[in-house]
Length: 303
Image (cartoon, rainbow, N blue to C red; front, side, top):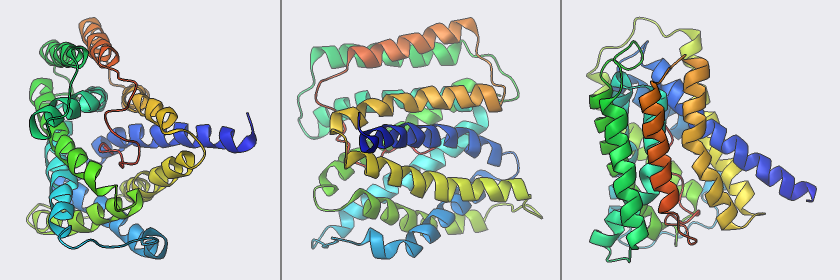
């Protein structure tokens, strides 16, 4: 393995760690601020970063007439609807449980593409989807209320709604990535999201002061996750096959669960661990050689 390929594998691993850790960082922020303030500030930081990086983001950019409606719809699905659901989900469930639910995204995309786009879905995908959904319901019903997850049933349901928003985003991005780069689409999401969440944030209660650790987390989410992870992911795609990069995305919920246990001291019951095994079994069962979500699409789940 040459050094370039090795660096690409390490870049993918670091990108998954960054995206996985964002669930924990987001949940920590919710202890100091209201959800809409947290979402606006993290997106505003990302938008500012993309504004600085605009000369590189716009490289090769050629706008196609009429695409504004698809770009706007994509951004409304994510970050707008996605973060509304996820921010309130993380107030009620653990970051680890929310992260595990993200593993269902490829299955949900395949099912929705069947209904919306008429794309073929195999019997194995349908079976895997049913098993994974059963696992999520089991995990939610068997959850014990605690400080990190005061209402896991509600929180996990809201996270499922967030994933439905991510499905809408993914189906639109699947078409748009044929004409625009991942960096441009992510920048567009940040700009629209900042405008969308500004009035919601202004109508919310703001803290009298923002602790320095919260400022650091906001910078981490805006620069490290929204900009840095995408840069690492795109770097890896220039040196590795798309199928290799697609395989690494399966680590995202694993890292989310691991960081939640290490940094937030979240704990799951034995029954919940069995339910998580059922979820992953459903995902593995539905695995197709051809990725359901092309790797050119910016990952929908960024915590």
